[in-house]
View: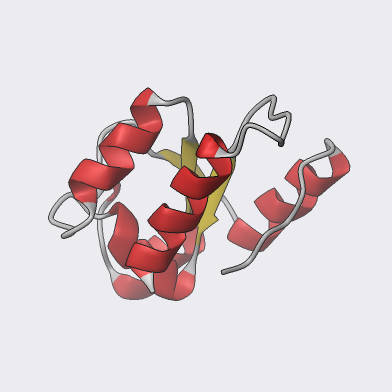
Length: 99
């Protein structure tokens, strides 16, 4: 699943027919594995960060899995609630795309 997520984001960035102001990826529940420092996809996450993608991790998921924020890839923003952040982003004009 994580490979599909990073590939979808990269494909979106590469699509010249789409006018993007910014891209944010919000991870919660099973998405946590993508943003952990020891993730197999860490390099892809960092490449996407360099291309301007903002990664956000649900704090509730960290609490529920007893994982410390220090275990996240550098630059990942911690948000109180993944679902709440999705709602805020949609209110701000972001599109919700679920792989």
